[in-house]
Image 1 (cartoon, rainbow, N blue to C red):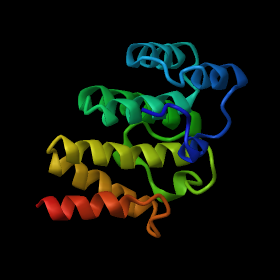
Image 2: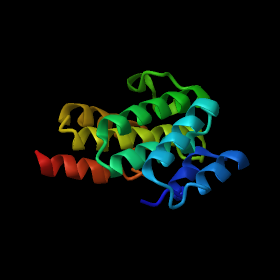
Image 3: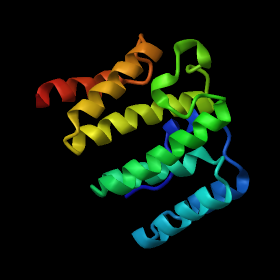
Length: 157
């Protein structure tokens, strides 16, 4: 599995040089090493939102949905703190942050989409629907592509 950050990681803003080196050093590493390094980054640099993204993508790709959901929730909390958003995602309103500029608020929004997808894959339709409803309120033009998850949700019903 590719571990290099994609353009999606740019949703979170800057990644420190030391964290970037750690992440880039994971190319071709065994899964256990990848997971250990990424979880270590979340503990030592909890503001490094890219590590949460890579963790939930990595775990979801391996169908480790409990771990993916856990990493996404931690990333959501870290992003909420960094963006000055309410930790309860259901309380966040469209005017609370600029969700279109790269940074913690955009990462937070993207992580909501990831949680909707994880919820769908876990068969938690109600949770996925609630998350999609919130995404629709915060990103009406669907800049982050939650419509893909919404379409999957509708097809699975």
